Amino acid sequence: MINLFLDIFVKMTWLENLLNNIFLYFLLDLENKWVNSLHFFFYELVKISLLITVIIFLISYIQSFFPPTKTKEILTKYTGIKGNILASLLGVVSPFCSCSSIPLFIGMNKAGAPVGASFSFLISSPLVDMASLLFLVTIFGYKLALAYVFVGVLLAVIGGVVIERLNLRDDLFLTRRQEAEALRKKNMKLREKNNDLLEIKKEPCPCAADETIYNDHIKYSIEQTLSVIKKIWKYILISVAIGSLIYNFAPQEIIQSFIGENNYFSVLIATLIGVPIYTDEMSAMIIGRAFFEKGVQIGTVLAFMMSAAALSLPSIMMLKSVMSVRLLSIFVGIVTFGIIIIGYLFNSLYFLF
Image (cartoon, rainbow, N blue to C red; front, side, top):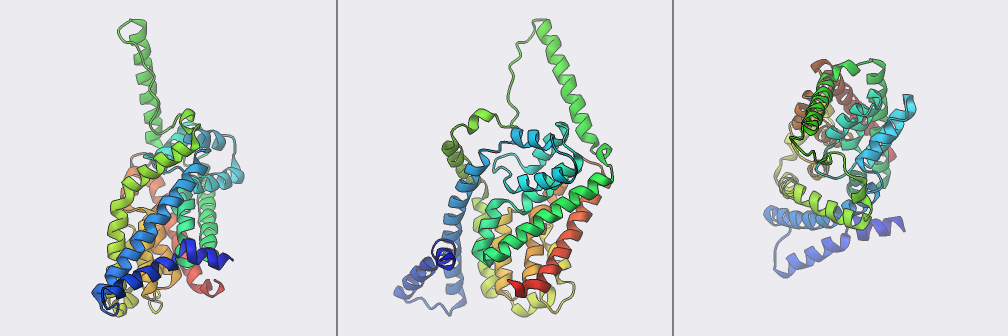
């Protein structure tokens, strides 16, 4: 029953058969690399578009019960390992909105959440969100997808615990400056009000959504789905095109020599390749699948995907603005080391899946 569901609704074998018949009807030879690339492009684009629309809607509906303000409120109540575990799990249902996990991370610290818990959220949010879980099922199957989520959450918990034990709250120096600046502005506005110079109108913070917008969960889910698709469609289009070219034209010998199983440093190289890529995690998965189809080991593919999601240069630059170089280096080091370990672990245990 599970395999039937996956074939129809996830892998969409009917779509592949439909495209095969269309190509054959127009006498297009699927053995030709350019034709096969076109087939790959249309199949992946239609499949991914349908899946992403459904997935984001469903996940947004779930997320509508966990607005950022509630997330921060929950995390301020728990400390220790419980806080790290809870923060990591909340990262799985982190919001799809214009606000990224980094502004939420800042808000959690300003609200008094434990540093370790906020870092656990920061690690798990881009790595193991529910949309990525469901999308991974379409590529590698549900067993491996669940294993990926488990190790991702485990990495987030361990990373948060380590950072908490190092007692590095003072290294979030710009957060304190932002608090001081916010207080200064608040006092200035109060003085202006007392002097009848300005009528203060309280505006909601764009990164802390008002609870009232979540009352209509269906409406919220539709709005979020349209917003996310509008934001990522270019990346999806480009990544599908790149994936189709890799799948059909990239020499397998060259790929194998760099990130194949015979190269002991393949996981490390794949991790470094993922860092400069500026894309969403689902786009990284599309390219990762193309590598997988070329014979690259699953752990190496996962390392590439995880580094692209959690360690992209734009994210690192954003984090640099809110923490010291020392804390940023520790964070990047922990995540990088964890990704490499996970990559080699999956390469060694892939036979279990």
